[in-house]
Amino acid sequence: TACFPSRRRMPDKCDQAKMKMKHSHAAHEAGGAPAVSWSPAAPLRTAWKTALGVPNSSWMMLRNGVDRRLNTIRQRRESWKWYKQMDGSTSYGEWLEAAQKLDEYEGHDVWKEVDNSPLFDTQHIRDRLEEMRELEASKDIQGIMFNLRSGLVRGLGGVGNIKLHTHAYVGTKRLIEDHSAQILRLLKVVQDAPESELRLQKKLTFFA
Image (cartoon, rainbow, N blue to C red; front, side, top):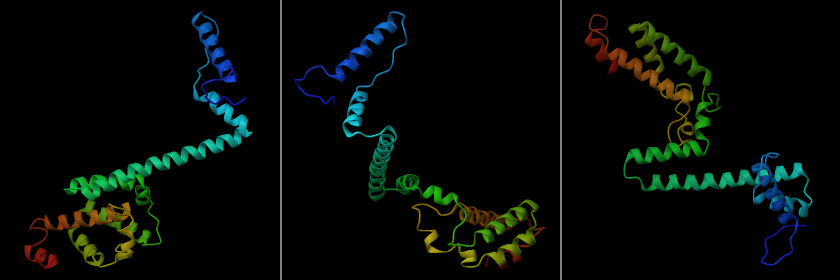
């Protein structure tokens, strides 16, 4: 018998279940067998399963599907909150906070961490990044300058592909960001090189 709430009804299985739980707790308090936890929603779920004739496995699939749908709704509500903050932001800090949250909720952060992509030459950029790191560690000024001259070209390895820079709200693939950051570090090494290693005129020529 389905135990749906109503103002007037005869005692049914819901009432019987509640009485059993009450006796169970009383026995537990008296030092008897441990009480079994009970939720007000449990008899209702059981009644629906019985009324619909849904097997346990199918019921679990249905329940999981509902849970996923509810999570999606919550995420959309959360996303809308950050969209509103972006639209009404009065500073870059406010906008950045909202954009980073949206990247998190919409899965763009996961996309950033995956190097492989048909949009750019992943292996070429990875190799260049490793080479630049080795040059920085060796402090080879001439090698650094040669590497930068050959690498500072537009569209190197496809990293300038507009699709890479419009997929997320903030940033792009982590590999590309690391590559760009490493280039900046090498430029700083050249800038700060002492006169004994790199004459000022050569610096000016390099950065011209």
